[in-house]
Every structure is written in C-alpha cells, then in structure tokens.
Length: 281
Image (cartoon, one colour):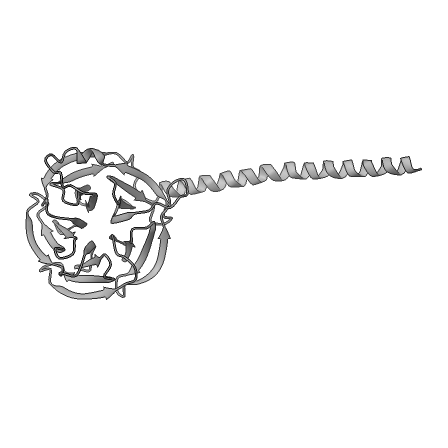
C-alpha cells in the first residue's frame, strides 16, 4: 500500500514540474520579445530627434582668433560672433567679426567675476559666472549691462531650446531654466551609450536638433539628444590642434557657435590662435 501511495505522489510531482516547466517556456520567449521591441522603439526615437548625421566634419576656413581670449562662451547671432572670456580680473564680453576674427567691441565683466557661457534671448545676452552664482544680462547692441539673476551652483555653458535655457555646471547634469525668472524647471542627466554619466560638460550649443557640448580638458564634442540626455555620438576634433602652429599657450578646446543660415560651426579654444569654420555632416 505504501508503495502504491509513493508512486501516486511521484506521478503528481512529475506532472506539476512538467506543467511549471511548460509555463516558464511560455513566459521566457514573451519576456525577451518585449525587451527587443522596447529597444527597437528607443533606437528609432534616438534617430529622429535631429538631422541624420554621419558625425564627420570638414574644415572650410581658418580665421584668426585673439590668442589672449580665454574663451568660455561662443554664439553666432546677427552675423556677429559674441564671445565671453574668463579669468578673474580679465573676463570680457565681446563682439567679433566672423570673417576676420577682429574684435569689434569689448567690455569688462568686472574684476571679481569669472565669466562663463553665454546665450542670447530676446536680443539680450545672458552671461554666466563660474562661482559667483550670478547671470549677468547685457544689451546685445551696445553691450551695456541691464540686469542680473541669481542661481545656485556653478555656471559653465548655456544654450537655448524652445524658449528655455539649458545650463551645464561641469557635471553630467543639465538644468533647464526659465529665462524670465532663471528658476530651474527641470533637469536632464546626460549618459553615454553604455548608460554611464558623461561628466565635465562645458560650453553648449543647440544645432540640428541636438545639443553640442564641449567635454572639458579634451578636444571632443558630445552630441546629445535633448529629450533623453543620451549621447548620440562623440566627435574628436584633436586634428584641429595640430593646425595651431606656434601656439604653445593653447589650452582646452572650448567654443561652439552655429550659423544656421550657412549651416556651419565656428569652433575654437581657450587662448587658441585660430577659429575654425567647420561643416558637420
């Protein structure tokens, strides 16, 4: 009798095990399929955020650049290059002729300020300071100072997307800021394609549907999806440094200005002797 009961128990156990195994076989393929579908959707989303680019470039022209300019911010507006330069005691805001590199106008930002990135909004120039927690506002015509805003943390780079500022602070974090109040309305964590934070984001420029960001202490620019913070590509501009002959004081690559009408970028660096007019395709 005991033997019969044991056989019945083993039969039931085997049946349940087989049933569970069959259920798992059904669940696993379904789960894998779902993950693949999600990944495909994400890839499609990344591809359509901006222009379809190969992320290659060609140098169209070399333009003289003030070797004493410790470039922090760079924008192209109204056929003029606006440039901010750093260092305590010698920070400036200036207008530069994009054809000759000649400084048209220059003002001092103030002895106690270390100027950083700039952007234009409603014909006003917004200029960040490194550790002063102040964004200075200037008239874009005569460069007269007309106001200021306070913010928390360090200020590095600045760009404008859909009437909102995107500000870097040297980390992988971009703050989205309302220009009218300079209050933070959102943040974006920038991550590389492997899911790791991309640190040292510096000068910013919005072009072709992407954020182009200098990576501090490198000759590289990260191309970022502004909706997700995912780095789409990193472009290495180190070959430009080789063109800086007799420019031993040339420091880090920094300065991205986009001319939408001509579809060209103006790229330079701190104390570089040249600005490079470049097409990215």
